Image (tube, rainbow, N blue to C red; front, side, top):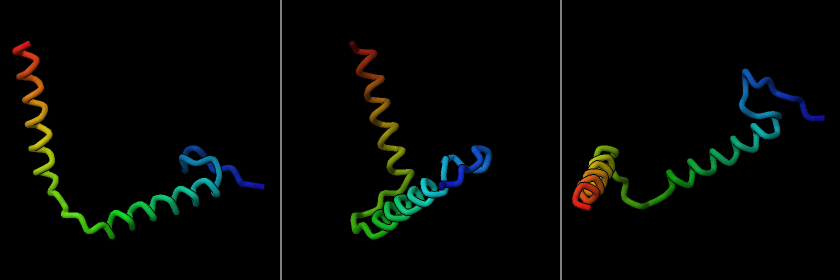
Length: 63
């Protein structure tokens, strides 16, 4: 029988669910760390996002 976990302590109902998520999460992190693609600094990504948003706002004003 699976032991129920307290919702105050864990977002998972059972230890099996928590273990399964932990395994999945670690695999995703490891795959990301092993990726050879160039890393893009956060500031660069945010600057690009701000530019896209500004362009969309400008387009809306013209419409």
